[in-house]
Length: 487
Image 1 (cartoon, one colour):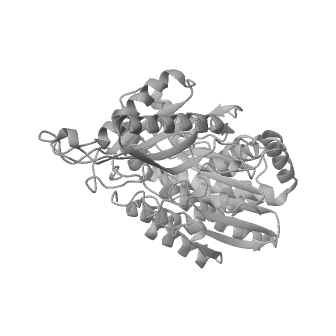
Image 2 (cartoon, helix red, strand yellow):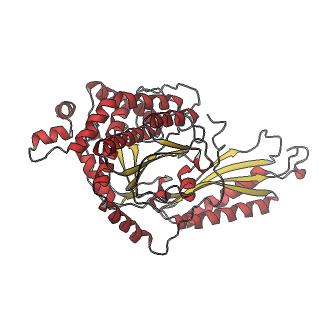
Image 3 (cartoon, one colour):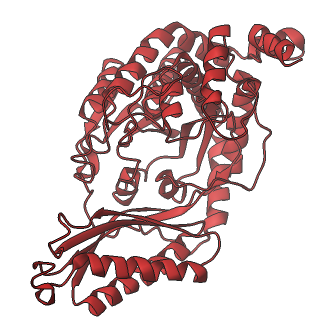
């Protein structure tokens, strides 16, 4: 039975054109037909752009080649480029058009350290300890180039007023570049923001996530011979471990939705030398940003107490922090309708074999491959237990996003299987679907600007009349070197 269903899945799919043939009451939309035709025609071009960025696999704030590649395509299409915004060399804003509505689209392009992988269904490292696109940001950035260019061509063809703002946002994986851009007012003149993220399913339901604050805690002591003169030393590692112990005790006394995780990044160089420096990276998460701040303040107190008790000194540096997502049902329903029109990802026989092989490397129950072609039902009140710097944008501009089945069903983000899937034909198909959905949603907004007012009212009702945005990073500058040495 499974083989029969899979065969039907391969042969028929769930495309909009197939739906039209089955149900004659569904009439083709000329604007959306334009989007489909344009993106089908240019698919090889955008696939190559994504492949190039996949091969660069550059870490946060170091995405020099990736940002140049994306800027080059947009510049050649008539967009004006404002590079190096918010004191981030790889960040930029590309703009086309004039007047309203102003639609913003987001693009990420950073990779993750230590996840180098070929686009094959077995573990095959390309560069030992090298980075890899395990969150699909090579597809993320390229999909929005494709969508923005298609929207631009549609504006020209229909002689429509309106502005497209393309935000090149580096360092999503820990650098929170979007937070600096929000803090600097780059979204102040934007009416709505649309975004997409690679996923293992097709879903456009509105949902929230975890707010997060990321901090480096550094302890300073006195070095000495650990055997001959231990009394002369004060161990920075002791201070750090005392802090870790107190925070681990604190876990019993925080809300169950909270997440606290850390790694010791530096703990000394030799066992016979009392360490005079130690460092740990901490992340605090919770669905409510206010609770994140409360827990973070308690962690700082633990660090201060640990330093006092070990006669060391402690300094900390807030690396990043972002709010939870504010869902916007108005925009989400609009996007969901276009997801239904475009449909999911239909596998070829070769892709089915690739998918089966990838799934065989996973140690938990996985969804059937056919789920890649299916669209998840629309639900409100959704939540996913991770964090994104898109969160800050959603508190100041009505925002909607979606996921498409970029990875083989069941594959988790930040895994070598995600790198392999995202570098395969499956990933590029999902990218193409995302570009179509974003472009179609943009057209819906340009054609019916009243949607903006409804979406803004929904946001205003959520945040309340007294809300004033204040970032969780304070007045610090972007941590441009936080990934250096890990490339």
